[in-house]
Image (cartoon, rainbow, N blue to C red; front, side, top):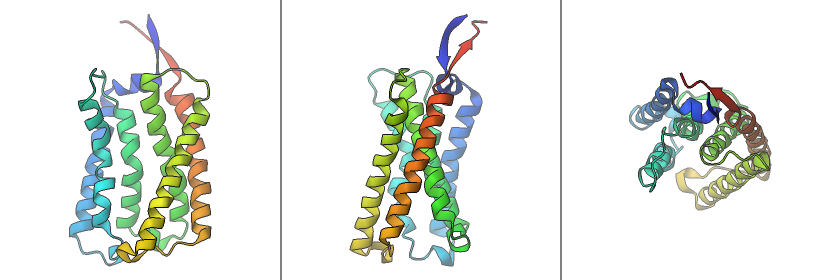
Length: 205
């Protein structure tokens, strides 16, 4: 028997993890192609073009980081890569499909779900480098909380500047987003620690 490895390292070696990662990245490109080049009335004023650097750029973060690492990482961190891009895929799909216009709870649900994905990405990447568990749950939750604070500051800046027609944010919107995303971050951290970080035996055969 080989020494035990954590689940995320095991998953990264599989063809299915690689395929899912590539599929997620293909989706973000396809969705933005639709959003930018297909005339959809309810996307007007949503500044989809302004989102491209952040949303599509998320698919390049880990590949670029891995490319310039002094020591190569084998296998490639497909799980972290896919989880990092998923929030942007889900949000863009919701916009293209008109979910925000047709279902009032969409924003609330996605703030929670997307932060689950985001913190899973953080934990997946972390467990590739560090198998230590002390304070891991709080570390992931803290990352999620910091991320939503930064996100809300960005939204406030956009709203204040009037870019894209402004967002029309209220204090209640901000508090709700902070609460839901932080809760999602806690869930994502728990998943990361108890699933992605869990050790498993690997046969040497």
